Image 1 (cartoon, each protein chain N blue to C red):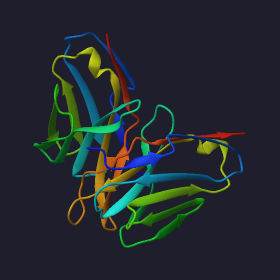
Image 2 (cartoon, one colour):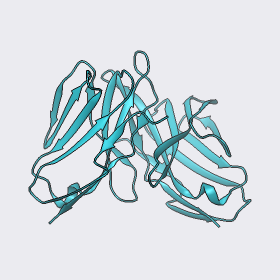
Image 3 (cartoon, rainbow over the protein chains, first blue to last red):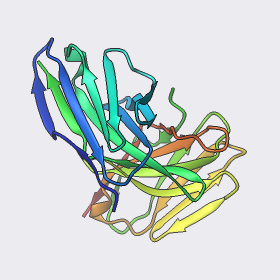
Length: 114
Length: 113
């Protein structure tokens, strides 16, 4: 079974802090994603990585950066956390199966910025 | 960029009834996928239907796709309390298959025992 793990289920940080969210997948998938999920807005893509050290901005990259030094690990960085970044953060990885990419998700990190 | 829109936003039914959720999208697709999310958890892939397919079954799930209407439906038959979750459609609109999926906002299904 594919396993995608996220470093924390719940996180509380203060405004202005630098925050690291870690995601690890164990199936050698090339693609990894960070989403945020907010009520009424669904899932929105923050960043996407298709290979080590390669990244692509998603729909809402402002205020975030990412790092992918190893294939299995994709980190999301909030340079200076703000209250409007309070959200559920979901990491996913994907692979090509039978003519399409299916995504596998981690359990999510609920981040509260106070 | 929201591609899929699910309908209804929320659905409440009794155990044993069928649940139908719909998804509409705007642009041509290569495939459409449905995912389930239990409360406070990550999404789980349920089923994928390609643009050249009209219907697909997996256990109690039945998915249809109408590319002329740019819409899909997910039917869960003989629902159970454990089916209570949010259901999302996701479209892959890239040429030859895109790594990125665009998710709708979801339908929240409640199955009452």
